[in-house]
Image 1 (cartoon, rainbow, N blue to C red):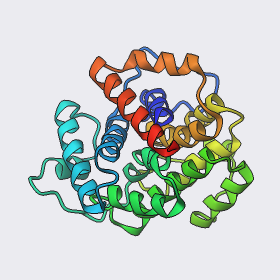
Image 2: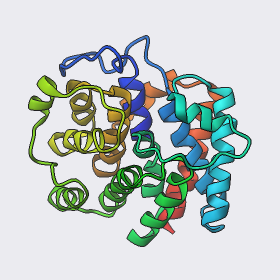
Image 3: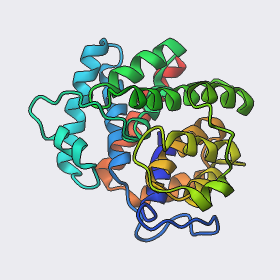
Image 4: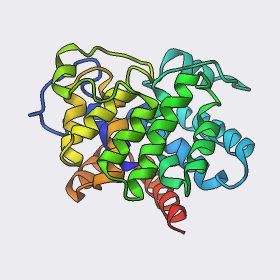
Length: 267
């Protein structure tokens, strides 16, 4: 999930001030971890604690951790989702928002089969984003991560991603940089973020593509970065730099959850 967090941190300064170029400092003094990183951590911790306890238990634990983390890190959330986080007994509210896809990377890393990707993705997504587009966006990203970590080629990933979004391949990052606008939906974010990965030459280039196209930059960075991590890996200097933008508790919890998630998938 470090790829998602790096994409989020890099994109945090461009979400409402799009850069639309690739020659920018990768990390800015104003960079920060947003709700994208915090909710990704929540999914990771829930999987680490309750991933094998059944879908209902996993869903319940995901909600509990999301609500707990949101109290400590209360900024950056969409209005509807934040209202959901504050409810005593939150129920799904038909969301198709891109938050479903930006937080899903731990599922792709944790799962041991495609069936498990589908099941776990739905369990941690449908708690809030139970619209078909929200569920599809999350599953597509998680599936790409799962396949990439298991050695799929870009051509194979491209084919699978187009099974979810046939429009992938019909535009380039260059074209998106001139026409793409801010979009909070899965259907208006996931194909574009995956395009950034498919055109990426390596992890850093993928993140730079995500900023280049504009739009919801932190979330596009999180989605593109999560797949790029599974396919390319992350350079150590970038991994080291992003930790400067995390407080001690957040860094410790991310490291612990990441180790458990990746350790389980290898067994």
